[in-house]
Image (cartoon, rainbow, N blue to C red; front, top):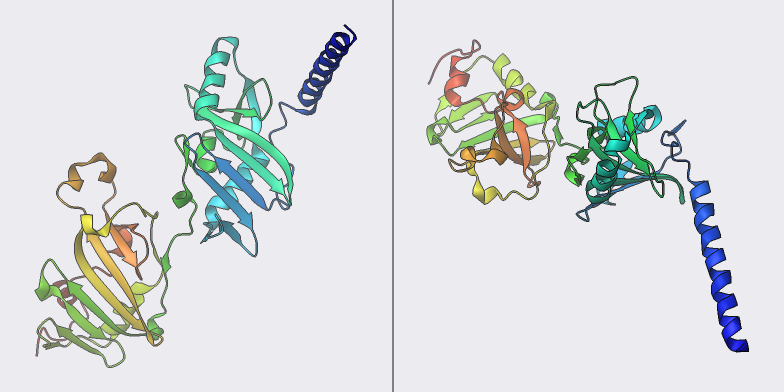
Length: 327
């Protein structure tokens, strides 16, 4: 009987203890404490979605993604900006509360923010309001969600500011884009192999000022044309990485080899196949191709940026700097 009494007392004490702990946790959570007064000391951000995708951003000399890739500067800047400008627009209506909490529980993206090893913020980002003027968010361990926005940019949806695509985190949205930026003075030769029309292939030697076609016939152009052509390979910005795409599924249309500074860089251009052009994944209003720079993962490139380096031999001949069409 004595032992039985001791068991009851132990259970009673445990209930009081855990109840006390639970109350303490609730008291420590400031449900409205989303924004940061400053972001200069943030050196790690972890984001995870319900599918198990996780990205870790760490600030070393520069921001690094998943201990492997450089982070796109523009993306980290706007994410830190929203962390400072984040404000509560309104509470969630009673009628919407259950829906919002269930949505965040099943689809929300968790954001953890650190200064050193200390976690200073942790919250979940859910979907947008029906009129798209706010985003549902909730602090970790809190009971109530809120409609959040940026007062300085009220029409901007928050998920995109965090690099979140719908309900997923994607490291490719954070990777620093490839930028081809070769000084014209450093380029000695460019060789273009055209796989669609081999007669449009050519080699242009910038240093020796010679242009030869596929049959090694020389074509004379005004000397200014060589420097103009070499200048095409500066400030070429590639789009998002698509590492899951296989180059073998595309149509290779050109290989461009740029010899500069005693090395040769390669740019391979792909077009969509006939089947791909019918698929939603590859549709879009902007004309685009796919490319590899020095055997990189596949990246998207926009035609309006790269059309100058995709110039054909016939187009070179038609330029104003042509001296004579052939020799």
